[in-house]
Amino acid sequence: MKQRKQCGFTLIELMITVAIVGILASIAYPSYVNYIVRANRSAAQSFMYAVANKQEQYMLNARTYAADIAALNISVPSEVAPNYTVTTAPNMSATPPTFTVTAVPIGAQLARDTQCGTLTLDSTGAKTATSSTGCW
Image (cartoon, rainbow, N blue to C red; front, side):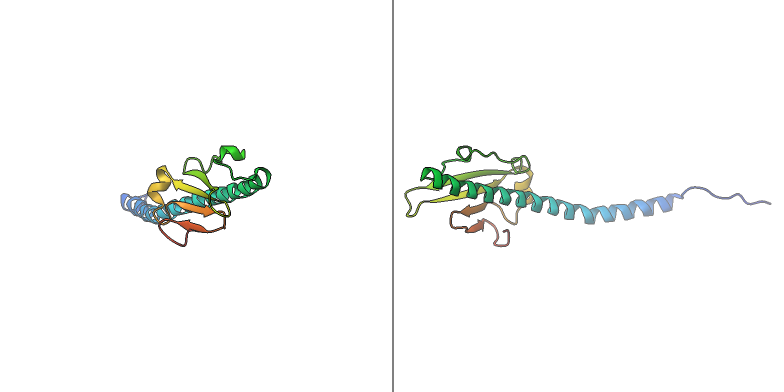
């Protein structure tokens, strides 16, 4: 009697493949989310440096710091706006005058970035985060 050649996969082989893919996905997805959170934070920090630079330029021209980001003629980039609310606050009563740039996480960034929280950059270059010191 002639034996027929089998083609295809058995149910056991298919279930093992699905289990392996599930295990790999359960490992890879949290790493991917962590990467996205760090990339969003990095974009916000870069924009904060740009705001600080514009504040210094504004100070040279107007002899005062700008009250908000709109006065600096810059807008929040599209990769930062959905994840952070960025504000600047001058303190003209201090000697010498100072400013602070603050980035507060919103939406998914707020829920996922529990390591750092709100980022702050001041006119002296001091960088802080509400939850940790390793965020900058």
